[in-house]
Length: 271
Ligand SMILES: Cc1cc2nc3c(=O)[nH]c(=O)nc-3n(C[C@H](O)[C@H](O)[C@H](O)COP(=O)(O)OP(=O)(O)OC[C@H]3O[C@@H](n4cnc5c(N)ncnc54)[C@H](O)[C@@H]3O)c2cc1C
Image (spheres, rainbow, N blue to C red):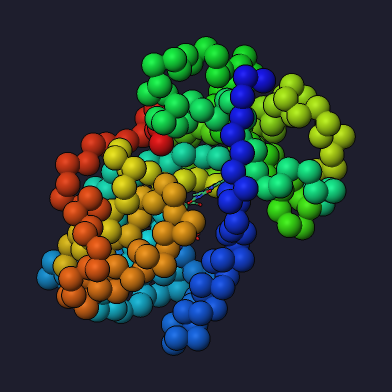
């Protein structure tokens, strides 16, 4: 191994718990949350968006906010809006709880491919940070181990760019993680595996989200590639946009009318 990075302040959020707590706080403030309810598209009247259709009917609204991550593109298209948001799949494998040993996160050298911070260094050479199993499995490794306070260790993360949105883990991804553990973390070879999953990160060509009213009555808040802690900030900005107030931070980099190039086609995005 050529090197690794370690930061004791990384890996502080268990995102499912954060999202559940945000939902609970919203409900306490009067929001109604409909789970397992798929929005099919937006409804327009006279050029204004005035609601959404769902599987069981429709919901009227003065303003509709599309904040559906990578799926926002298809929903915006139902209002005739082309939103250039792509999807980057990351796969993760979790062990059963193990004695604390990672505390809390270690990135490996293969992950440097993903970061301009490293790629822009004059001494950076792609071949030093690439291994054969990445091309064999058709992925790149965002190589990391993280251990949660419960003791479970997260192993990952194979990255790829399926042409259609696909948030299912693959055997190629599992094989890549297995290779990585065998080569770089052999002490975990016999770790008991609990589960495997994948998520799709939304991203735009300039890596900033779109937060804007894109047609009258339709606000988009999507394309957050680093969205874990950005939700509350985005929510505050969206509420200010809806009320016609000046956003409390400059959102010119997030406006829809900035020159956003198309993304996708399987080409990797870099952070
Ligand atoms: C393995 C992994 C590690 C990550 N690590 C980090 C990290 O360290 N830091 C960080 O900041 N970010 C990280 N991310 C990225 C982060 O998860 C995303 O940036 C964030 O989830 C985007 O939030 P979002 O609400 O915009 O979209 P999402 O979280 O994708 O939420 C979109 C929601 O919309 C719902 N939806 C979609 N279509 C419809 C529909 N038609 N009707 C109703 N609902 C719909 C979906 O079910 C989903 O619940 C990571 C992601 C992965 C997968």
